[in-house]
Length: 227
Image (cartoon, rainbow, N blue to C red; front, side):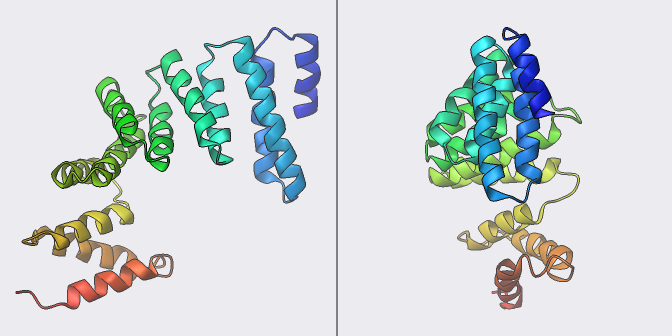
């Protein structure tokens, strides 16, 4: 498929769709091959194809976003930021564009910029079935930003909002909010319910090994006598 699209690109060099589809095909190869050298080569060729795509059509939002995600996956975060930004500028209505951009900024400890991306996403995105997981991620990212900036009250509000909108509760959120409540002075009594749910859902099930460290913390906290 990638070779066929390469030939199509040569025959129609002014069409951004061909290098975009070639980038997609190369990334699929990179994700499915077991050969490390092939994976690296396919990833680099995908980056090159996607760069050609945005050069041909600077307003191709999906191409910018896929290029950004590919650079992000290769730990080239600074290079990814430009294309995350350009994807949103090209089409600010796409919910999935916002969380990885904010996540990259958090990884770079650019918390003010991450807060702006999160706030803009929450401002412009309607809450629909399609956008819900991305809006949820933005609230979790907001909590991480507030935590990094020492804004405990805002962090708790963001975590509470995420927990309230999640139909299938994620264990990480129960643990994070429960332990935050437990560490408060004085402790918020809601911690026991949240960590109790974590214990039942995770530590008594098949995911116990994956969350072994968290289960140990939760067990110690739940066995500690209340004062």
